[in-house]
Length: 304
Image 1 (tube, rainbow, N blue to C red):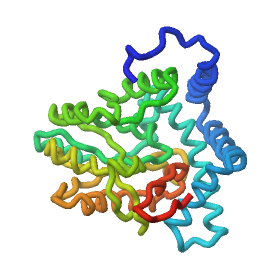
Image 2 (image 1 turned 45 degrees about the horizontal axis):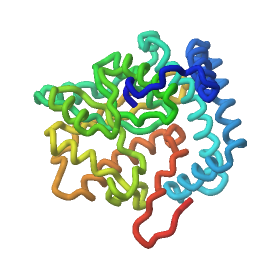
Image 3 (image 1 turned 90 degrees about the vertical axis):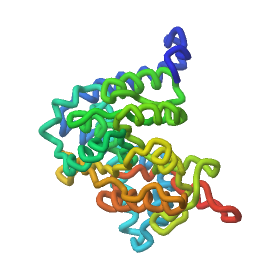
């Protein structure tokens, strides 16, 4: 949503819940680290029991992707997923509302030379990120090492959209609406790094079906399309909270070779293979709350 479309005033009572959420995030961003973890864990556990339909989505996703887990182990992973995503709310608040330099001692960056080598080609770089609970904090910490733009989905609430856009614009060079393909292409052709996360279900019209954890998943075609239009190398990137719950690791991988090909399904499968590898490292930190397998091939019944 562009600035010119924002309401003249956000004083109406319908915006009060958003004001409360924004105020809570700003306050939460300044809490001591241990308290952030404790509150995040509490939020996650509360949501686990108060939002059963989300719990069903998480359980279904994990059952599909990790069929080797018995019910008890899957139940623990469901619980850990809610806790990680609860902590992720405080991490997002920190990324949006604090200067990331205060967390420089908490992050290590592996493989930065891969990104530097990709940039040295003289083109922009399309960084493929993933929707982990740490995503927005990861973007803030990534900005300590190299500037980048980000592709994002606008929020439905205009007040929260303004707050979110301003926060991301402070972290990134430019926040680009995911529907603005021209904007993405323009920034890449100008030599910028663009962080883009293609791991959600955006529907049949923009997707092909490719395997993810052995399940046919609607996988967006846009990654290969952007690479083809711009010549930008596609660089996979992981970001995780480490097991100590105090430090983070950014891990950049070499650009995908011979990408894109002339096979849309094969290209989507390659991107999904990286996504799967990243998720397997810290599965509890992934956004399993999303109905990743909502869109099904013709004739196949729904999974949720």
